[in-house]
Every structure is written in structure tokens, then in C-alpha cells.
Length: 491
Ligand SMILES: Cc1cc2nc3c(=O)[nH]c(=O)nc-3n(C[C@H](O)[C@H](O)[C@H](O)COP(=O)(O)OP(=O)(O)OC[C@H]3O[C@@H](n4cnc5c(N)ncnc54)[C@H](O)[C@@H]3O)c2cc1C
Ligand code: SF4
Image (cartoon, rainbow, N blue to C red; front, side, top):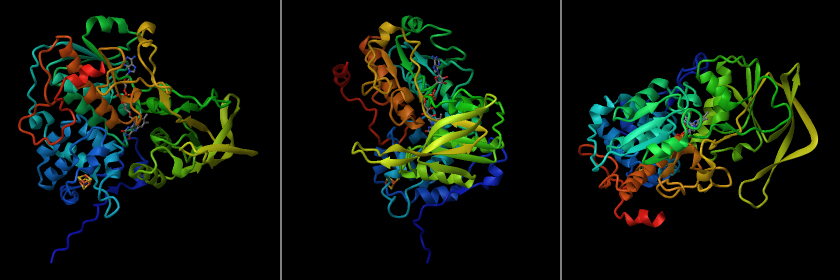
């Protein structure tokens, strides 16, 4: 009698010692087809996970497709909401897995690993998808500012609807933080490029080294285009303002990762301290080991249980991968001063914290100031967040755009800002600040832009669905706009 094993199919990781030998040696051993079929066959089709996915991908749909070995269908289902299937198959924090009904039984379904298999083993995207471009009765012009995942997703869904899209990118690369922030050992550059090339193959144009505000004025874009989508991400480092921050060998993680990802080999010395506890801190720590550091410590002001993203399966995986590579963690500390010698950092003075429940939700770290500690380090990397830089938007327009107290743009349900015709998405608008949320924003914005263009008479109709692939067993309703008045009401 054959015994069926309903447990989650474990994913293997490459030997951590091997991983540390190269900047682009991958971490995970991909699932085989046999493993993908076994894993996707566990799906009950209940659909609970769809609510956990910011882009509302039809997750059970592609599990059922893969359980039946239908890889083309699995790709098409993903593309209904996501043009970055390979990217998300590798680095999505998979919030869907945290709400999978199987989670408290045999382990949540490994949706991300299955997505990775689909993207990396399917044929040429264009041949599989056979996208038929829509004709909406007009071909107006839309400018996208920023070629990160949000900007490029909007470019994709607008291009396949016959809109002329021009993407203005301040750097010489497309991909945003996917190429400047996320290290190649977690996300292959070839995969990013493959997906960017595919998106641009539908007619969208990209202008590199065109920073809006510096190389081209925002006002000129307003005059030239019928609508604008702002997707500039968060690139302004939030500094700790700890004394000694200006010493040599003290970096902000965005600068540090950006320089290394662009080919520089920074000498980090033997001991590196990372200040912070999110995505960026983990990447900076693992990158430092690959640059030759012997000891890397992540210093975080809260406790292990209060770290960003915890509790989630992603936070657990992230910690396991880092600990395997011998990253060390020191929880509940507050730096007092970065101490230098001859202008270069040589250590950190710090307090230990205690976590206090002040009845306002998340526990707060409070330094115990009776005793100070000191740690010798060669490099300090602050991974303490970043903010959007809106200085390119003229004052009179900025005044009309509502912002949150945290400095994000406020948008409506179609990601339109409070300035009609100007839309925004990605890290500058959503709270999660991850790729899939930026993709979800951009999908909504694309629909909103089409509705806006129709309202100003630039196109004659809007599609019931954003995508228009041949056949396609689409079961989700996320983008279905049955009544245009919904849009009129929110203006
Ligand atoms: C180190 C690190 C690791 C991360 N790891 C993950 C992960 O594992 N999984 C995950 O889902 N997310 C991860 N994230 C978050 C993820 O990268 C972001 O949420 C996502 O890239 C945001 O997309 P975006 O399109 O809003 O902005 P960005 O990706 O930041 O792209 C914005 C683009 O706009 C351009 N730009 C900015 N200003 C201008 C201007 N004035 N004119 C023209 N162009 C401009 C920038 O050059 C950039 O290319 C990570 C982030 C970092 C920093
Ligand atoms: S919650 Fe889990 S079991 Fe239910 S459809 Fe989603 S992946 Fe399948």
C-alpha cells in the first residue's frame, strides 16, 4: 500500500561554507518537478491564502495547475496580477503562507518555492502568455517615475492596454532596490533582467540616468503626459544621529549594499556591527561575511520576538539562513556613541535595553542607563530605514498632496494621490514596503489610470479585466470594475 505523506516538502539549502565563497552563490536548492507536484498536491483549494497576498494572486489556481503538471497555466495565473514571477518566487516574504489553512497541521503550503519553479522552468514568457494587446480607443501617454518593481508593473499593465508608457529612471539600471539593495546571493541578476526585458517588450520605453527634478523637470512631465505614476521608492537614509556617525567605516546599509551590488569591494575589516533588524540588516550582515568579515553582529534595540516581520515564516527562514552563515545577534541594545581613532571607527559604546509594555501595542525598548558597555568593531552599518525624496515635486503641487505623518503619500483605492491624474505606489505609499505590495499598488494604479484617462476622454473604454491572455482560467475578481461610479465618487 502506498502511504501518502502530507507533510510540507522540505526545501534544501546549499552548504553555508560554500555560499560564503561568492557574492552570487544562491542560498536555496530549487525544488525538483517531483517535489513541486508533491507539494502543490497538498493544496486544499480553500483560497484562504489569497487574502494574505497583497496582490490577491489566485494561489490555489496555480497550485492546482502545478499539481497537474500544467506549468504554462501556472505562469498565466500568476501574470494576471504579477509580472515579476521569478523575483517573487525567490524573495517574496510570502505572507500568504502565514495564513494557509495547513499551517497549524503539516506546515503551510510552500507557495513561494512553487512559484520559483514555475518561473525558472517555464518556456519563454512571451510565447507562453501570448498577450493580445488591448485597444481601448486611444493611445494616450503616461509617464512613470522610477523603474523599480512598482513602476515596471504599472508599465506592464498599461502597455498591454495600448497606452504609451515612458519610464524615467534616475540610475543606469532597471529594477530599483531589487538590483541596488537585494544581494545577488538571494536574487539572481539574470532573472531580474529577464523579467524587465519581458515587461519592456510590450512597447514601454525606459530612459536611464534621467532623474526627475535633476535631469528633467516634473512640470515638464505634467505638460507632456496625460497622467503620471510616481514610484520612486525610499532612497533617503534615515540616520540614527548617534555621535560618531560621520566616522570613516560607518555606512548606511543602502549606501553600503548599493556600492557592493554595483561592483565595489568594500574592505569591512574583521568585525562588523549592523544596527537594525529588518530585511536590510540581514542582507548587510550576510554581505559583510562574503566580503571577508570574520565576525558579524546584528545589534537590534528590541527583543528577538519584537523584531520586524516577526512572527512569520519569512522571519524564521531569514534568521535560520543568517545563523547558518554564523551571523550573531545581540538583542535589546541602544548605541550611545560610535568611538573613533584617527577619524576611523573602532568601537561602539552602548546600553542594554528592557522591553516595556506601555499599553500602546508594540512593546518599546527602554535603555537601562546604570551601566555602559563597549564593543570593538572595524565597521558599522546602520540599517535603520529610509524615506522617499519628494523634493523634485514643485511646492504648489506638493501642497495639494496629502501625506502621512511618517512621510508617505496618501492615495485612494486606485492609488491616485490627492492631485487628480497623479498616481503613486510602492514603498512611498504602502506600509509593508515589500515587492509584492508595490506590485499590488501598481496593478491598482494601472486600473485607476485607465479610469482617469477615460474620464478625461483620452480612451473610450476600460477593460473589465486588466489582462487579456488567450483562454486563461482566471478565478479572481480583484481588478473587476463593474461600476465606474465607484471611481467618480472618490475623486
Ligand atoms: C536590502 C533590501 C532587501 C530587501 N529585501 C526584500 C525581500 O527580500 N523581499 C521583498 O519583497 N522586498 C525586499 N525589499 C524591499 C523591496 O526592495 C522594496 O519594497 C521594493 O523594491 C520597492 O519598490 P518600488 O518600486 O516602490 O521602489 P524601488 O525599488 O526603490 O525603485 C524606485 C526607483 O525609482 C528611482 N528613482 C528614485 N527617485 C527618482 C527620480 N527623482 N527620478 C527618476 N527615478 C527615480 C530609483 O533609482 C529606483 O530605481 C528589500 C529592500 C532592501 C533595501
Ligand atoms: S490556504 Fe493553503 S491550502 Fe488553502 S488554497 Fe491557499 S495554499 Fe491551498
